[in-house]
Image (cartoon, rainbow, N blue to C red; front, side, top):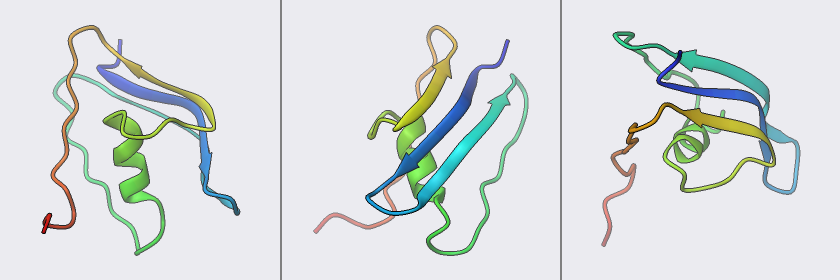
Length: 77
């Protein structure tokens, strides 16, 4: 069973979808890198995973006891 996963996940902010019907799982011991150009949805995906925002469609699946945290991109003033 995956520690963390998304299933058929979509999110949009009033325009075309930023993430459309994405699915993946992260298993114990895997190392993951998130790469992409500016504006391609990397921060949106991380906010979905740490429960800062909710998807428009689909679900984020967490194994019991999993905690997700992220380092903010911008330094608070």
